[in-house]
Amino acid sequence: MNTSPAPSPPFPPASPYRGRLAPSPTGLLHLGHARTFWTAQERCRAAGGTLVLRNEDLDSTRYKMEFVDAMIEDLRWFGFEWQEGPDCGGGFGPYSQSERMRFYLDALEKLRAGGFIYPCTCSRKDIQAASRAPHANDDAEPIYPGTCRDKSPSTPNSQLSTRFAWRFRVPDGETIAFVDGNCGAQRFIAGKDFGDFVVWRQDDVPAYQLACAVDDAAMGITEVVRGADLLLSTARQLLLHRALGWMPPVFFHCELLRDENGVRLAKRHDALSLRALRGAGRTPEELRAAWR
Ligand code: GLU
Image (cartoon, rainbow, N blue to C red):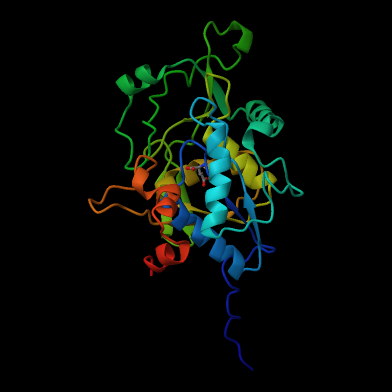
Protein backbone atom coordinates (compact mmCIF):
# COMPACT_ATOMS: atom_id res chain seq x y z
CA MET A 1 0.00 0.00 0.00
CA ASN A 2 1.29 3.44 -0.82
CA THR A 3 1.60 5.35 2.44
CA SER A 4 3.15 8.51 1.05
CA PRO A 5 1.11 11.61 1.80
CA ALA A 6 -1.45 12.63 -0.79
CA PRO A 7 -0.12 15.30 -3.14
CA SER A 8 -1.02 18.73 -1.85
CA PRO A 9 -3.87 20.35 -3.75
CA PRO A 10 -3.04 23.15 -6.17
CA PHE A 11 -2.40 26.37 -4.31
CA PRO A 12 -4.55 27.92 -2.90
CA PRO A 13 -6.66 25.15 -1.43
CA ALA A 14 -9.73 27.27 -0.67
CA SER A 15 -12.43 26.80 -3.19
CA PRO A 16 -14.18 28.18 -5.07
CA TYR A 17 -11.45 30.68 -5.83
CA ARG A 18 -12.36 34.37 -5.70
CA GLY A 19 -9.75 36.92 -6.68
CA ARG A 20 -9.87 40.66 -7.05
CA LEU A 21 -8.42 43.65 -8.87
CA ALA A 22 -8.52 46.63 -6.51
CA PRO A 23 -7.32 49.80 -8.24
CA SER A 24 -7.58 53.26 -6.67
CA PRO A 25 -8.77 55.86 -9.16
CA THR A 26 -6.14 58.43 -8.19
CA GLY A 27 -4.50 58.59 -11.60
CA LEU A 28 -4.15 56.64 -14.81
CA LEU A 29 -3.26 52.97 -14.53
CA HIS A 30 0.25 52.15 -15.67
CA LEU A 31 2.11 49.10 -16.81
CA GLY A 32 3.05 48.18 -13.24
CA HIS A 33 -0.60 47.87 -12.26
CA ALA A 34 -1.31 45.91 -15.41
CA ARG A 35 1.41 43.43 -14.61
CA THR A 36 0.22 42.74 -11.08
CA PHE A 37 -3.39 42.57 -12.21
CA TRP A 38 -2.45 40.22 -15.03
CA THR A 39 -0.95 37.83 -12.51
CA ALA A 40 -4.15 38.12 -10.48
CA GLN A 41 -6.25 37.32 -13.52
CA GLU A 42 -4.07 34.40 -14.57
CA ARG A 43 -4.13 32.84 -11.12
CA CYS A 44 -7.87 33.26 -10.97
CA ARG A 45 -8.33 31.68 -14.40
CA ALA A 46 -6.03 28.78 -13.58
CA ALA A 47 -8.18 28.07 -10.53
CA GLY A 48 -11.42 28.39 -12.51
CA GLY A 49 -12.39 31.23 -10.18
CA THR A 50 -14.35 34.45 -10.16
CA LEU A 51 -12.56 37.78 -10.58
CA VAL A 52 -13.93 40.85 -8.83
CA LEU A 53 -13.18 44.46 -9.77
CA ARG A 54 -13.28 46.66 -6.69
CA ASN A 55 -13.14 50.41 -7.12
CA GLU A 56 -11.12 51.74 -4.15
CA ASP A 57 -12.50 55.26 -4.28
CA LEU A 58 -12.65 56.10 -0.58
CA ASP A 59 -10.12 58.86 -0.58
CA SER A 60 -12.19 61.62 -2.13
CA THR A 61 -9.36 64.11 -1.68
CA ARG A 62 -7.21 62.12 -4.09
CA TYR A 63 -9.47 60.31 -6.47
CA LYS A 64 -11.25 61.77 -9.46
CA MET A 65 -14.39 60.45 -11.06
CA GLU A 66 -12.88 60.69 -14.53
CA PHE A 67 -10.24 58.17 -13.47
CA VAL A 68 -12.90 55.60 -12.62
CA ASP A 69 -14.15 55.54 -16.21
CA ALA A 70 -10.60 55.63 -17.57
CA MET A 71 -9.64 52.76 -15.27
CA ILE A 72 -12.43 50.51 -16.54
CA GLU A 73 -11.77 51.40 -20.17
CA ASP A 74 -8.01 50.84 -19.86
CA LEU A 75 -8.44 47.53 -18.06
CA ARG A 76 -10.78 46.27 -20.76
CA TRP A 77 -8.45 47.45 -23.50
CA PHE A 78 -5.60 45.54 -21.92
CA GLY A 79 -7.65 42.34 -21.89
CA PHE A 80 -8.97 42.13 -18.35
CA GLU A 81 -12.28 40.39 -17.84
CA TRP A 82 -13.97 40.41 -14.47
CA GLN A 83 -17.20 38.74 -13.53
CA GLU A 84 -18.29 41.12 -10.77
CA GLY A 85 -17.71 44.83 -10.48
CA PRO A 86 -19.13 48.34 -10.36
CA ASP A 87 -20.01 48.21 -14.04
CA CYS A 88 -21.60 44.76 -14.10
CA GLY A 89 -22.86 44.12 -10.56
CA GLY A 90 -22.75 40.78 -8.76
CA GLY A 91 -23.86 39.18 -5.54
CA PHE A 92 -21.31 40.85 -3.24
CA GLY A 93 -21.82 44.50 -4.12
CA PRO A 94 -21.70 47.37 -4.06
CA TYR A 95 -18.26 47.28 -5.70
CA SER A 96 -17.22 50.88 -5.09
CA GLN A 97 -15.85 51.48 -1.63
CA SER A 98 -17.54 54.87 -1.36
CA GLU A 99 -20.86 52.98 -1.32
CA ARG A 100 -19.83 50.49 1.35
CA MET A 101 -19.72 52.73 4.41
CA ARG A 102 -22.09 50.58 6.46
CA PHE A 103 -19.70 47.62 6.24
CA TYR A 104 -16.81 49.73 7.54
CA LEU A 105 -18.88 51.32 10.33
CA ASP A 106 -20.02 47.91 11.44
CA ALA A 107 -16.44 46.61 11.62
CA LEU A 108 -15.31 49.77 13.44
CA GLU A 109 -17.98 49.23 16.05
CA LYS A 110 -16.89 45.61 16.54
CA LEU A 111 -13.28 46.68 16.98
CA ARG A 112 -14.30 49.38 19.44
CA ALA A 113 -16.52 47.05 21.44
CA GLY A 114 -13.71 44.48 21.55
CA GLY A 115 -11.22 47.04 22.89
CA PHE A 116 -8.93 46.70 19.86
CA ILE A 117 -8.81 50.39 18.95
CA TYR A 118 -8.42 53.74 20.68
CA PRO A 119 -9.01 57.35 19.73
CA CYS A 120 -5.89 59.22 18.69
CA THR A 121 -5.61 62.99 18.41
CA CYS A 122 -2.00 63.10 17.17
CA SER A 123 -1.30 64.96 13.97
CA ARG A 124 0.95 63.56 11.29
CA LYS A 125 3.55 66.10 12.38
CA ASP A 126 3.42 65.00 16.03
CA ILE A 127 3.99 61.43 14.97
CA GLN A 128 6.87 62.17 12.67
CA ALA A 129 8.56 64.20 15.40
CA ALA A 130 8.15 61.47 18.03
CA SER A 131 8.30 58.25 16.07
CA ARG A 132 10.52 55.55 17.47
CA ALA A 133 11.98 54.31 14.23
CA PRO A 134 12.04 55.19 10.60
CA HIS A 135 9.40 53.43 8.60
CA ALA A 136 10.24 50.33 6.65
CA ASN A 137 11.08 50.46 2.98
CA ASP A 138 8.14 50.87 0.68
CA ASP A 139 5.81 51.49 3.59
CA ALA A 140 4.61 55.01 4.13
CA GLU A 141 3.64 54.79 7.77
CA PRO A 142 6.07 55.80 10.53
CA ILE A 143 5.91 53.71 13.69
CA TYR A 144 3.42 55.31 16.02
CA PRO A 145 5.10 56.34 19.30
CA GLY A 146 2.07 55.38 21.38
CA THR A 147 1.19 58.84 22.64
CA CYS A 148 -2.58 58.27 22.83
CA ARG A 149 -2.42 54.56 23.58
CA ASP A 150 -2.82 54.76 27.29
CA LYS A 151 -5.20 57.65 27.59
CA SER A 152 -8.34 56.69 29.42
CA PRO A 153 -10.19 54.30 27.14
CA SER A 154 -13.41 55.41 28.76
CA THR A 155 -13.19 58.96 27.45
CA PRO A 156 -16.48 59.31 25.58
CA ASN A 157 -15.96 60.40 22.01
CA SER A 158 -18.03 63.53 22.60
CA GLN A 159 -15.52 64.65 25.24
CA LEU A 160 -12.53 64.49 22.98
CA SER A 161 -11.83 68.11 22.29
CA THR A 162 -10.41 67.79 18.82
CA ARG A 163 -10.93 65.55 15.86
CA PHE A 164 -9.49 62.12 16.31
CA ALA A 165 -8.60 59.01 14.40
CA TRP A 166 -9.18 55.42 15.55
CA ARG A 167 -5.97 53.48 15.88
CA PHE A 168 -5.49 49.71 16.19
CA ARG A 169 -3.42 48.61 19.17
CA VAL A 170 -0.91 46.08 17.84
CA PRO A 171 0.27 43.20 20.09
CA ASP A 172 3.80 44.49 20.76
CA GLY A 173 6.46 41.86 20.25
CA GLU A 174 4.22 39.31 18.58
CA THR A 175 5.48 37.85 15.32
CA ILE A 176 2.93 37.98 12.55
CA ALA A 177 3.86 35.17 10.20
CA PHE A 178 2.34 34.04 6.95
CA VAL A 179 3.42 32.11 3.90
CA ASP A 180 3.15 34.19 0.77
CA GLY A 181 2.34 32.31 -2.42
CA ASN A 182 5.11 34.12 -4.27
CA CYS A 183 7.54 35.53 -1.70
CA GLY A 184 7.56 32.58 0.70
CA ALA A 185 7.63 32.74 4.49
CA GLN A 186 7.14 36.22 5.94
CA ARG A 187 7.60 37.36 9.52
CA PHE A 188 6.92 40.81 10.90
CA ILE A 189 7.15 41.87 14.51
CA ALA A 190 4.29 44.01 15.75
CA GLY A 191 5.52 47.18 17.43
CA LYS A 192 8.89 46.91 15.68
CA ASP A 193 8.26 46.47 11.97
CA PHE A 194 4.99 48.35 12.17
CA GLY A 195 3.14 50.12 14.94
CA ASP A 196 -0.39 50.99 15.95
CA PHE A 197 -2.12 51.89 12.71
CA VAL A 198 -5.07 54.03 11.80
CA VAL A 199 -8.28 52.25 10.93
CA TRP A 200 -10.45 55.36 10.72
CA ARG A 201 -9.00 58.71 9.73
CA GLN A 202 -9.45 62.05 11.43
CA ASP A 203 -11.37 63.30 8.42
CA ASP A 204 -13.95 60.55 9.03
CA VAL A 205 -12.87 58.26 6.21
CA PRO A 206 -12.15 54.55 6.79
CA ALA A 207 -8.44 53.90 6.34
CA TYR A 208 -7.15 51.61 3.62
CA GLN A 209 -6.22 48.80 6.05
CA LEU A 210 -9.73 48.53 7.43
CA ALA A 211 -11.57 48.97 4.14
CA CYS A 212 -9.39 46.37 2.48
CA ALA A 213 -9.74 43.73 5.21
CA VAL A 214 -13.49 44.31 5.47
CA ASP A 215 -14.04 44.07 1.73
CA ASP A 216 -11.81 41.06 1.18
CA ALA A 217 -13.79 39.26 3.88
CA ALA A 218 -17.24 40.50 2.85
CA MET A 219 -16.60 39.77 -0.82
CA GLY A 220 -15.43 36.25 -0.04
CA ILE A 221 -11.99 36.80 -1.56
CA THR A 222 -9.93 33.63 -1.18
CA GLU A 223 -6.60 34.92 -2.55
CA VAL A 224 -5.26 38.48 -2.62
CA VAL A 225 -2.75 39.12 -5.42
CA ARG A 226 -1.06 42.51 -5.13
CA GLY A 227 2.26 44.34 -5.17
CA ALA A 228 5.12 43.44 -2.81
CA ASP A 229 5.01 46.99 -1.42
CA LEU A 230 1.97 45.82 0.56
CA LEU A 231 3.60 42.95 2.48
CA LEU A 232 3.61 44.94 5.71
CA SER A 233 0.03 45.96 5.13
CA THR A 234 -0.80 42.28 4.94
CA ALA A 235 0.56 41.83 8.46
CA ARG A 236 -1.71 44.65 9.64
CA GLN A 237 -4.70 43.27 7.80
CA LEU A 238 -4.14 39.81 9.25
CA LEU A 239 -4.46 41.38 12.71
CA LEU A 240 -7.74 42.98 11.65
CA HIS A 241 -9.11 39.71 10.30
CA ARG A 242 -8.19 38.03 13.58
CA ALA A 243 -9.70 40.77 15.75
CA LEU A 244 -12.91 40.61 13.73
CA GLY A 245 -13.04 36.82 13.93
CA TRP A 246 -12.68 36.26 10.20
CA MET A 247 -10.79 33.67 8.21
CA PRO A 248 -8.25 35.64 6.16
CA PRO A 249 -7.58 35.03 2.47
CA VAL A 250 -4.19 33.73 1.34
CA PHE A 251 -1.72 36.13 -0.28
CA PHE A 252 0.45 36.33 -3.37
CA HIS A 253 2.62 39.46 -3.57
CA CYS A 254 4.16 40.29 -6.94
CA GLU A 255 7.50 41.94 -7.52
CA LEU A 256 7.04 45.52 -8.64
CA LEU A 257 7.95 46.72 -12.09
CA ARG A 258 10.78 49.27 -12.07
CA ASP A 259 11.92 51.78 -14.64
CA GLU A 260 15.38 51.75 -16.24
CA ASN A 261 16.79 53.53 -13.15
CA GLY A 262 15.37 50.96 -10.78
CA VAL A 263 12.65 53.34 -9.59
CA ARG A 264 9.35 51.66 -8.92
CA LEU A 265 6.69 52.58 -11.48
CA ALA A 266 4.17 55.03 -10.14
CA LYS A 267 1.35 57.07 -11.49
CA ARG A 268 3.84 59.83 -12.21
CA HIS A 269 5.43 57.70 -14.94
CA ASP A 270 2.98 59.17 -17.41
CA ALA A 271 4.61 57.70 -20.48
CA LEU A 272 3.99 54.23 -19.13
CA SER A 273 0.31 54.76 -18.47
CA LEU A 274 -1.82 52.27 -20.37
CA ARG A 275 -3.51 55.20 -22.05
CA ALA A 276 -0.27 56.72 -23.32
CA LEU A 277 0.99 53.34 -24.51
CA ARG A 278 -2.25 52.74 -26.37
CA GLY A 279 -2.03 56.24 -27.89
CA ALA A 280 1.49 55.43 -29.06
CA GLY A 281 0.16 52.41 -30.95
CA ARG A 282 1.40 49.70 -28.59
CA THR A 283 -0.73 46.59 -28.23
CA PRO A 284 -1.47 44.64 -25.03
CA GLU A 285 -0.07 41.46 -26.62
CA GLU A 286 3.24 43.14 -27.36
CA LEU A 287 3.42 44.70 -23.89
CA ARG A 288 2.72 41.37 -22.24
CA ALA A 289 5.29 39.60 -24.41
CA ALA A 290 7.98 41.88 -22.93
CA TRP A 291 7.29 40.39 -19.47
CA ARG A 292 8.35 36.92 -20.49
N1 GLU B 1 -6.11 50.16 -3.98
C1 GLU B 1 -4.81 49.73 -3.60
C2 GLU B 1 -3.78 50.32 -4.50
O1 GLU B 1 -4.12 50.70 -5.61
C3 GLU B 1 -4.68 48.25 -3.73
C4 GLU B 1 -4.60 47.62 -2.46
C5 GLU B 1 -4.68 46.12 -2.47
O2 GLU B 1 -4.54 45.46 -3.50
O3 GLU B 1 -4.92 45.64 -1.39
O4 GLU B 1 -2.66 50.42 -4.09
